[in-house]
Length: 377
Image 1 (cartoon, rainbow, N blue to C red):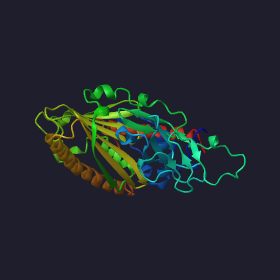
Image 2 (spheres, helix red, strand yellow; image 1 turned 60 degrees about the vertical axis):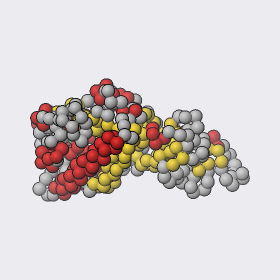
Image 3 (cartoon, helix red, strand yellow; image 1 turned 30 degrees about the horizontal axis):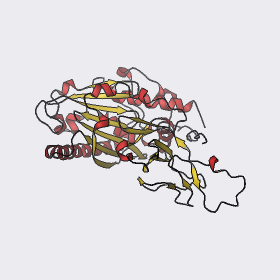
Image 4 (cartoon, rainbow, N blue to C red; image 1 turned 90 degrees about the vertical axis):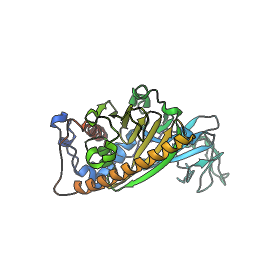
């Protein structure tokens, strides 16, 4: 099969992308990224090419792809992607693009014995090889072996399925080193899916990520969430190469998350995936850019028990409580988006105590932009 092409890049860097803004300074002296990075539509295009087309992207979990023929669709950096469980049991990812004239192979998640283009009926096996070509008997110099689907790199970690548009991405495991050991004895791959909820947020995706990455705002935006922590002053952030984790010590008394205390671990995997882990439960949320001032946040809930009466009660309490927190976050993010567009604001400063995670994310963003600039279109 032919190698996938390099992801398309923006035609040129936004005029607001200045060399001085790409420098990394120590946290205590650093400024936040410029407001134009959140508001200028050209940065929305830049993020597509410099960030999302250059990183591993979470698309599904293996429970969604349990049987041969199961497939899910995703949009990665503007590219249509299909992930399918093939007949041999292997997971494979392809561009959801027929090699005839660009038609779609599937229009929604589902199950199929073959992938059949919805435009002209070209038929592909689940391993991507072209099998059927209607009304092509008179075409010369045509070999079906040359027209298989274009593959996309795929990796699975703890039951979560990722794809990358890069030709030779770094191993996914290297980006997630240490997480599996830190969250033990909770084993993410053994948890059972329970619920999916999506939120439309009228803010740039980076505004939402910034907000997620600090507990600084919790006393002011989430007073009920604050009550879950045994010691807010012990709330801390730890950073790794490609992720950060916020650690919140939980109350020992029964709360919506757990019985007996422990820690809430809030992982952010650059650029747009969050894994919120408490004992026996995972809440994943992926932030999908929609427009310069809009994003969609998709939450999926997993638990070690989803069938007992106590478990069902816990799930309902958890989802209800989380919904309140998400709506509070959505409201403040929308107000921040308006503030960032104001003539009164351009850059701010970081709280060394509470905003190391935001600083870490923004430095990785700068790194992505610098790498993109090294390879102009």
